[in-house]
Amino acid sequence: MYGGGYIGEPEKNQPQVQDDPEKLAEFEAKIDRGEKIEPQDWMPADYRKQLIRMIEQHAHSEIIGALPEGTFITRAPGFKRKMALMAKVQDEIGHGQMLYSAAETLGKTREQMFSDLLSGKSKYSNVFNYPAETWADVTIVGFLIDAAAIVNQVINSKGSYGPYCRALERICYEEAFHLKQGHDAFVSLAAGTPMQRKMAQDGLNRWWEPIMHFFGPSDKISVHSERLMRWKVKLASNDDMRQQFLNTYVPKVWEIGMTLPDPNLRKNPETKQWEFTEPNWDTFFKVINGGGPCNKERLAVRKWAEEKGRWVRQALTNPKEKYTVPFA
Amino acid sequence: MKIISLDPRIARLSDLPEESETVIVEHEEGWITFEVFHQKKKGTRHTHVGIVHAPNAEMAIVFAKESFARRGPTTNLWVVKSEDVVATDYDDSDIFDTTPDKQYREAGFYKTRNKIDLLKDSEAHE
Image (cartoon, rainbow over all chains, first blue to last red; front, side, top):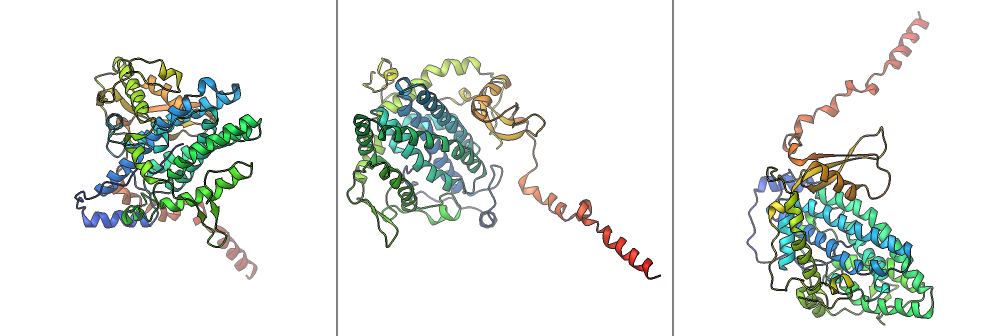
């Protein structure tokens, strides 16, 4: 997973830091030429801030995303599925680590990011505030949520910040396996007994709204910054990413005779755009602000892990070693 | 606090922190960072692949294996403390600007065949 997804717009009405106009012009020229920005380069204060926020939330999403799936490791149907799920969950934690490192090169320590996650200051992808109720949910997360994340991550890997792009390239490569194993497990249910088929359909019905929420509100209601586009921090609009996702994956659901719980979902043959019922965005904002079925559980588990693991980290710490910001 | 969870590992915990409880992760708990270099096949170059947090080099190797050698071939890993990396400054990268112009350092710069052909031509006409 679980990259990206829409977590919220950057804070508005904050006083903008005035950057040195000469350096800014040089910086923008570099980006226009397609060059990557590296940690040691000069960058506008707002570029740094937005990237930290975005990469950090992406990292949190990887870590928290492992929780609903991890739930089913003990109950995966068969040895092969269990091995695959364990490998996937381990990958997600690894992706979280890589992304924390990428954010860390921008000057925010990993520990500060952990603390901000635990205090609720910093968010993670909203889909993980929902539970995986049955094994079918795990297959749908692996198939469709990972697919949505890949759409987002492939786009972001063309961004301007070197360490983030490098992490994303590696992540996308590993995610390809997540998507395939999810698809395989999902198709196995769909091709199974009537009871398995029903399980898969129920799961789809449960997850459709969170999936439609994944890329965030329509561009019509969510303002995005021209500047972040120009700096290649954001590379595609929420609607474009959602269209790309629907275009590839709705046919894959339909081809195995499964349905999606939206009677208006169709591709308009003239505009070539997908049409759908607008999901309830009030629900989305309610869940992201703490009102979802699993928000409490997710944070409680992370807090528990930090508290219970502290003595191990402290026992290993060598006080003579002094931290420096990682290099690349 | 106890939570009714679908996850049996969570449902059996009785000491989950309350929602109101603040948990701060102190900076010193995060250890230091190491740059990781990965070698696919013996005889090939090591490539920088990322960083790990670890209290010492020995643990860094353990974490590097978990993070960067989960699939595909690996024969060797190096870890180097991030603070020990010495690098040129990107702002000074103009010191390399003229290097690609030094065509006389390239084999393709030397068009000797032309000269031989000319020489042979002139000898034939003598």
